Amino acid sequence: AQSVTQLDSQVPVFEEAPVELRCNYSSSVSVYLFWYVQYPNQGLQLLLKYLSGSTLVESINGFEAEFNKSQTSFHLRKPSVHISDTAEYFCAVSGTSYGKLTFGQGTILTVHP
Amino acid sequence: GAGVSQSPSNKVTEKGKDVELRCDPISGHTALYWYRQSLGQGLEFLIYFQGNSAPDKSGLPSDRFSAERTGGSVSTLTIQRTQQEDSAVYLCASSLEGVGTGELFFGEGSRLTVL
Image (tube, rainbow over all chains, first blue to last red; front, side, top):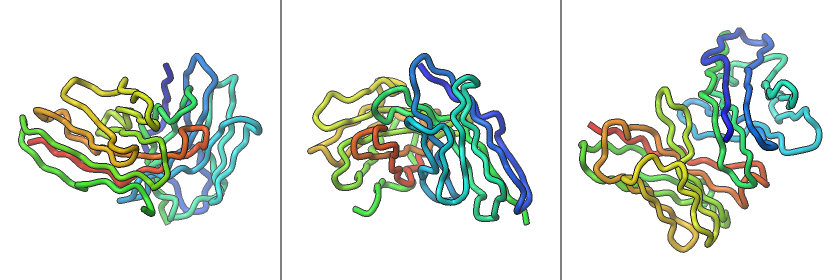
């Protein structure tokens, strides 16, 4: 079985500041790791994923996450946030070859002007 | 269609009534999932369908919950004798072939309120 812990339920930051959203997981098997984002009044969208290969993965809008197997972490970072990044972010893990994802509780990122 | 479509978007019902929630996956997606998003519980996996294989029902919380997928496309989640703790947003997602593609496409959800 897997579990995911997102250590911060809410993260307020100012525009252009850096941000890190923390995610730790536990699993007895090899994992696939994901960050999904839910903008206000929208459905969940994939932000980035780690399946294999390079442990540093990036999204098209400047977010990145690094898979750290020894620390069982997959923290999400962005060096400079925008107002439009305000959303709820979910870390998820799967230990199977299909999409039976285990999600964290979510982190609400609020970017202030 | 262009995306995963769910209906109704909002449903208010009385305790003890049955409800049906519908999901239209993206055309050509063979895998379909149901999740539940509720306050304090995050996102919970409910059930997974892949092609003609037997579904993974391991996440269904009780025997009041059931789901079917007809013709490998549309899916219906049925909740019998609804209880107040069933109030949540029920999310449907589809994908080409599971997490191997790395992406689930989610609908906007059906918000269920049980009075």
